[in-house]
Amino acid sequence: MVKQMEDRHSVWIRFCHWVNMISITLLILTGYYIHAPHTFRLFSNMDTPRTIHFAMAYLLCFGVLIRVYYAIVAKDAKNIVFSVKEDTPKFPSMIKYYMFMADSHPYYGKYNPGQKMMYTGWLVMVLLQIITGFILYKPNMFMALGGFLGGYMAVRLIHYIVTWLFVLSVLAHVYLDISEGVPVLKSMFTGKIPADFDHGTHEEEIETGTGVGA
Amino acid sequence: MPTKLSRRDFVRLCAGSAAAISMTGFLAPYMSEAVAAGAPSVIWLQGASCTGCSISLLNTVHPDIKKVLTEVISLRYHPNIMAAAGDLAIQEMFKVAEEGNFFLVVEGAVPTGADGLYCTVGEQNGHHITFENLVKTIGKKSNAILSFGTCSAFGGIPATPPNPTNCKAVDQVVKDVPVINVPGCPPHPDWMVGTIAHVLLYGIPELDTFGRPKMFFSNIIHDNCERRQYFDNGIFAKTFGEPGCMLELGCKGPISHCDASTRLFNGGVNWCVKSGGVCIGCTEPQFPAWPMYERMAEMPVGPATSVTVDQVGIVLGGLAVAGIGGHLAGNIATGRIGPKKEDVEKEGDN
Ligand code: HEM
Ligand code: SF4
Ligand code: SF4
Image (cartoon, rainbow over all chains, first blue to last red; front, side, top):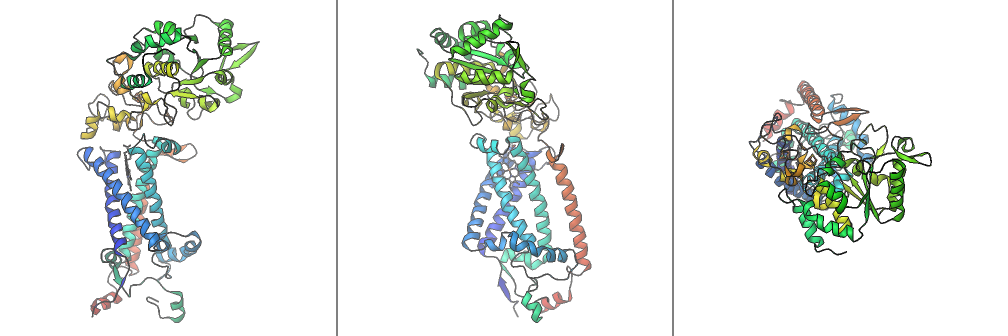
């Protein structure tokens, strides 16, 4: 019998996810070399990483633009945008689950509040990187914006701090998603997830005692 | 005003002028003609400064500075090089200001703490004349203020925290008068003479966001540096005196605007990187509020406390790895990860 599968990620979500993953990974790697070529000996010259950095910068703009457009048009934004009012109250149960103080957690929707917070944070961080990056890339074109942000040194600092934030959050993201189960990881390739995968307990299911994983 | 040199040619000359031709030498005849025809005079004031900008101006080599000062600009007041002194000089300055039609050059930041008493520049009727007050009153009457040097243009060294005298840039103190910023620590003499020439012959030059004349400050040092090939090839000096790009030694070339690398200082002899130093970004509004010989400033984490971004990143990274390790152990201990009875059953369904 074939395992019952249900749709999780549309082809657009998967396409954007991997495009953005590639561009951000390469931006981080080349960025560290640009920052400290003696410490991060990843390349043998400055030409290649800078060319890659700027090419990936445009790819990132493209990937983010499509992702944001999709989120709005396909009404996917509610899945990934953190809502202070609706998502904050869901934190305690999630933290309890992650701290092993509870065996299951309520059904949160597609993503739990922590994930939503991270994905929304990424949008902010990507926009910050794009803004500060283009100020550094075209220092004469965006002089006023650079001055507004506190000058080029501050812009550089923001660009570098946000890079570290990316490294740290990607670390957490990769771990949490893999540890949630291989099906979740697979779903970003195939778009599908087993229909009986435990997404948490629905409230009405708690009452009737029928839910998956209840 | 009779002039054979069009503004376009002038700007091209200023922007393109390399060490090969002396800009001041070329401009001198036009400027003396203008001065002879009654061009505005110049008053030069010094506040919280080290006089370095004046010294740099005195480095104008061709024609020699004497000719520049007596024939090329009608300089009516300068604290260091005028012959008059004391009350005589002060009265002369006020007279020029009353007559109007003059440009005010300001060298040095304006200390505004203690009602400006940290910097007094003379006396009038037995009262101190504070620099702040003088810049305000004389500045209002001038056609335009030329802020020479980073201190007057952006605050520079005197205005860098903790700044006990509350020094400010001229354009923060005087409003309603056009201000041209000619930063540099010190500025190249060509930038100063060229800007004076432009205002005398053609009026206010085209300025960038920070009020700097575009003809001198629209190049990024990093894009015109003779060590750029080292940068592109990934050859970085580890110590001073080594060949290689100075990026890792703290060069601010990638974020600094000026044309020193093609114009060269000291009459076309040398410039900051060629002499084996780094560009310290002396023409930028935030100068010198960053470490000269470090790639990047530290990030503030509390009052008067800062750490490097890498330190924070590594600590947080360590915590994250520890957290992941702990959680992974928990996951395995509670059976959330690893062979579970249900999973085995599920496999069997396939
Ligand atoms: C996730 C996105 C990005 C990451 C992680 C990233 C990372 C980095 C890092 C670590 C550096 C070295 C910083 C320094 O030491 O000054 C850097 C430099 C740079 N980045 Fe990015 N970057 C990203 C996006 C962008 C974008 C969108 C642009 C736009 C063109 C850009 C343009 C630049 C430029 C021009 C530099 C050179 C700065 C300099 O030489 O001081 N970056 N990047
Ligand atoms: S020495 Fe400075 S200005 Fe020259 S290439 Fe290196 S970083 Fe750029
Ligand atoms: S190269 Fe750098 S340090 Fe030298 S004058 Fe220009 S901005 Fe100042």
